[in-house]
Length: 205
Image (cartoon, rainbow, N blue to C red; front, top):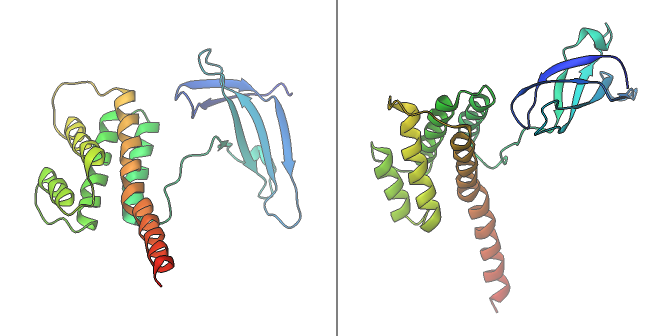
């Protein structure tokens, strides 16, 4: 443990924090460039106190010349099967959330939903009608249709002035449900179709 104290925004609780450096590990493998310094910190907020790992790299002027960034916990990454344009929209929603811009988070979640409908072939001009079209096509049903419609309604809070405050919990839930919807449409459906095809082939005489 060193005497150095670092300030950072905790990725777990989202609050400003500071911490002494509780330990350092250096990665200096000659086959890996640049060398990296990993530092263990602890969130200073009493209700959090989560361990955080920061990393700095040495590009020739020492680790002290590099601004430390959060290494762990890492940001959730969308599955590679999800179209890049939708990933961009969703990742911008995540950045808005990290900046505590919760209304903007809902706007970007709504844009992600609109982009998803367009990518899935929905042809209506209004988001609610596009969602009903996807449901009629069997692409979303039951609980997922309810999730999608609620994301549309919640997205209106961000897109239109209502005077309502958007809570961090509402913004986090919107992100979680949007991610689940993307996983269902682009990851799980594809896996299920592949699984179904294998079972049909195995059952054939």
